[in-house]
Amino acid sequence: LTALLLLPHAIFATLQTGSPLGIALAAQSGARPAFAGESLLAYLGMLPGGLAGIVPGLLMLTGIAACAVQLARWQTPWRDRTTRALVLLVLTALVQLTLVGLFILPQVRYVFFAIVLLVVAGCVALTTLLYRRGTLGRLALAGVAAALIVSLAVNPFVVRDTANRYLAENGWQRELGMLIGQVAGQPCSVLATDVPQITWYSGCYAYNFGNRATEGDRDRLLVHGERFLVVRANGLFQPQAELMAGYLARADPEPVAVVRRPDGSVAARLYRFR
Image 1: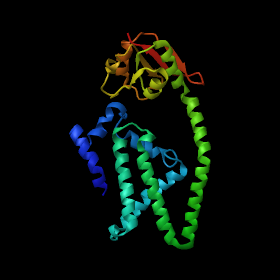
Image 2: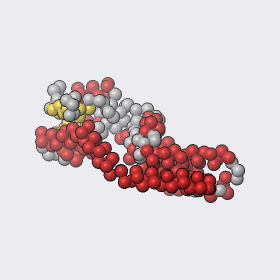
Image 3: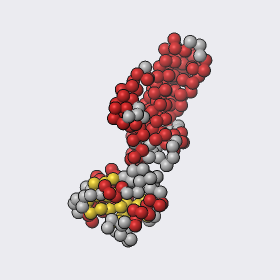
Image 4: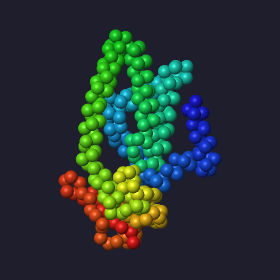
């Protein structure tokens, strides 16, 4: 069934790109990781709480472990309804995680589908396996349900605090976008890492650096009015030093502006292409 559900995507990808993996591989042009498997390591490092919170993260691990245990027993597992459900959920999630983890930079939003499947797998494992353990199992199941209810109740406050921390750390992106809109006029185009934020706040056309290992001429895409280059101080998702030096050589030597974080450290520099 898993293969059957993936078949339409494989057919479409083959028709469009010539390969069943063509769409996933094409994503490298705009979201290439530093090395193959970088995202897999990042997602593993986020467990159990970094991907979806502590309780959902533990449910994800529970689903994977339960699936492995059920398969390891191998006593006509395909006649076991619970095992079939776990295999479908876990295998589909792991296939998606693997494809995204190998070829695309680490972003939690890219693996929401896999997160949901693994959380459901964890719930299936707990509700079926613990329920069979009698009174103690049912008490444990009630404890898990209570933890989920509490986590849902607390979640709005956690999300608000997380959003406030993110704004404190990354508010400079909004400031930068608004600054570009003020100095550039319209139309304008920008080469940068933070494409959505810059596009939204500046009104300019924005483009990312593409394949950061081989592409050093993405500024050719900047054909709308004044052209700018944003260089992050931390180098996040930017080209290798040699390629970045080429971009800087085609820009004015002095930055138009320097944007700083709340602690005074440099967040990014804005250059104008000649």
